[in-house]
Length: 485
Image (tube, rainbow, N blue to C red):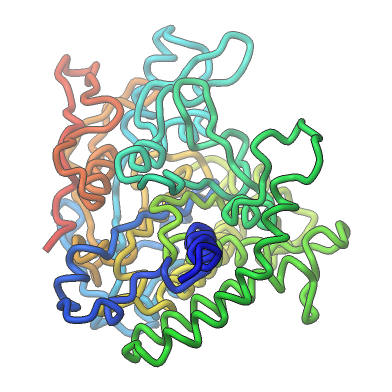
């Protein structure tokens, strides 16, 4: 093989274009496929983050007569009509779901109490929840400004631990909900890309290392000049490799080839799909999210990164059928929860429709991951997809939180279940009253680290918080129980 052909193949693999960038067990000759799958299919994790919080009656599937005790439901044996409205779009993925009920953002709640006692000044639940959701530690209380994340976030930490040489440790895509969720360190928001086309260029290596320099052809120019021949070479390689593959690997290679082609078309405006850059007046809200989903799938199937965070765009009333005269935050979210001031049943239904729209997006994300064959399953089977909400309700509750975990994480999670956690922990709320709540979400962070192979790590963020009313401490160490087989 000539040096040129070797360099071109390395180039394709680095960009995730060639067959060599994929895990294809049937190319391994006499090696056992089972052994190859066990040792070479990586576990990935994807965080899907949405603003505000769900409307409790429209997502609860718990047994009301058993709220004092742990219990669970078998999702695989349920009819679609038995799913709560918000979770109904996920029904087709029920065998690969864990629906978690009654978690508590304990560190955020305790910080509200600290602010009430004079440690800091910003106790706004939105700001604290956005800061704590992925860090689980005290915020940076900034003089003259709002509180912001006080430590490295879970997605970046996991990326540090599982990232591979020459690949991205993590990627953060999507939009902004007042404040970021991902942090390099205290008061250091992590870079986040909001433009799918730019994210694609970044993934393909097009972005210059120093955009301020103008010394001739840019890195993008050089890469694009070489990439055309690389794509031609990739097509020839696909044709050469396909006859040697088993049916599952051949399907995966075709899906990989098709995904790259679809992304290129969507970004170039070819084939009737509007280009992101060609018409700034065209609303591409749905297309943007779909393209980010495709990018995440491509990144995982090519092993470009093993950690992706996708921050969903904030929806407006027209996106879920509510009157456009309503304000999403003040009119709908703040009046959507029973036993809270200003409750309006119609606003509660609109809030449920708002989160049903997000559930449809999450289901589409799972569709993309589940459509790519890999080993004895799909990319989804080897991925942990975690849907986290900023708050538990639109009225700023931070206990009774929902969480959805999808995918098997290479068999780590025991899926197909709705898992309810009894309120057995005492956590002081910002107004000073102690209340019995479910387990802290800090334990879920530990479980996610364990799913990613970091089983030697038993805490993330704060290791314990004090319960002021009793003078005792609540441990935040250890994984969340009842998630694994």
